[in-house]
Length: 251
Image (cartoon, rainbow, N blue to C red):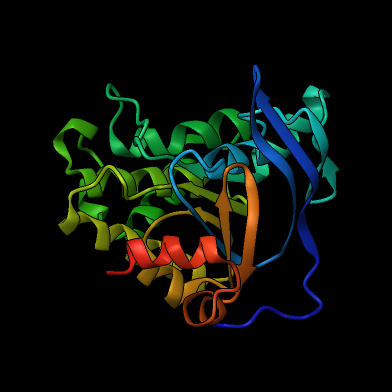
């Protein structure tokens, strides 16, 4: 695991972030700062608020209190700010969300042509390069339904990378996959982490976390309970709740 340069700037700053769904208080005063180039793994039980939290970072969910600043831009109701931030952030979900009627190449090159105003040639060249990077260049002209789940998720990662984002968010990207497909997706994420990409990953894949995370953050009941390096979290967790959770998932 590489270290992050001490002088790296803070690319995500969250201060006292709160979120409610009606009366349900799902995020309770989250304070978290992420440095440029940092790989952060967010883990915790279902319903702990971790997916909601990363969705607030690109405004897929709106926070009601507190401050979120991404790459120097504060997330407010200003649509221009939201648009500016979304062009800098790639996101990969549990479900692959690929367009079924478009080929793999078209899925990846569509957004850069629309948003970045690239020519079709440029967008398709970058899409082709990214398919090589994620290990499936031969699938370019197939449709999503012709691919395995692991291949579809790798296309989804390539599609997010095509926008050349500064930050990548992963929301349990392997949880919908069969066990033998998980490794191929984690391998791509590991390569991405080693390339210096800023990454926030909600995942239960503790081997991946141990190998590539600079820091791990444990969420429970809408609160950030504990954070530390993988070594600190695995070998010497401070909170009883963290110990209990890890004992259940690290059989």
